[in-house]
Picture 1 (cartoon, rainbow, N blue to C red):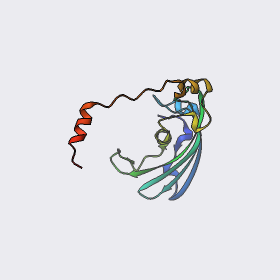
Picture 2 (picture 1 turned 180 degrees about the horizontal axis):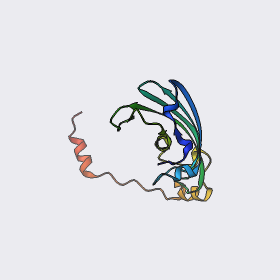
Picture 3 (picture 1 turned 180 degrees about the vertical axis):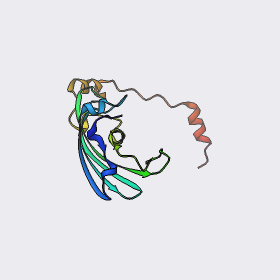
Picture 4 (picture 1 turned 135 degrees about the vertical axis):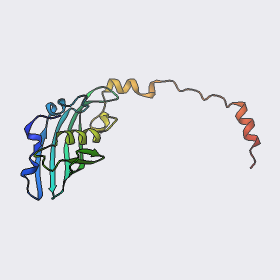
Length: 170
C-alpha cells in the first residue's frame, strides 16, 4: 500500500460534483507494491464525480513502460495508455465486490494508489516485443530467423489415414 500523501484523496473535504486530479507516477511508485511487474513513468488523470452516497472514479493514463523485449531481450521503452473506472459506495460494512468498494461513510480519506497500480498493471500487454516500438536486435533476429534452417521434408502420409479416407462416402 502507498503511504505517500499525494495519492490520498480527502473525500470528506470534497463537495458534491466533479473533481480532477493529476499524478505523475515514477518507478519508485511501483516499487512500493510487492511483486509489481510495472516499471515506468506514467501520467495519470483522475476525475472523481462525488455524489451523496457514492464516488465515481474515472482514470486515464499514458506513459512508457521500461521493459525487456520477449524475443531479443533488448531493453525497450514500450508506450502504453488506457483507462479504468471504479465505484466507491458509502456503507456501514466495508467490503469489496468486483469493481465496487464499500467504505464507511465517516472515512476521511481514500488512497487511490492501489487503484492506479492495478489499472496500469492490468492494461499492460502480456507479450512485449520490439516490433511494437522498433526493430529487434539484428544478431538475435538473424539467429531466430527460419531462413537458416533446412526445410524439413514432409513425412509420407500415414497409410491408416489414407485407408480411412477411402471409407468416407461422397
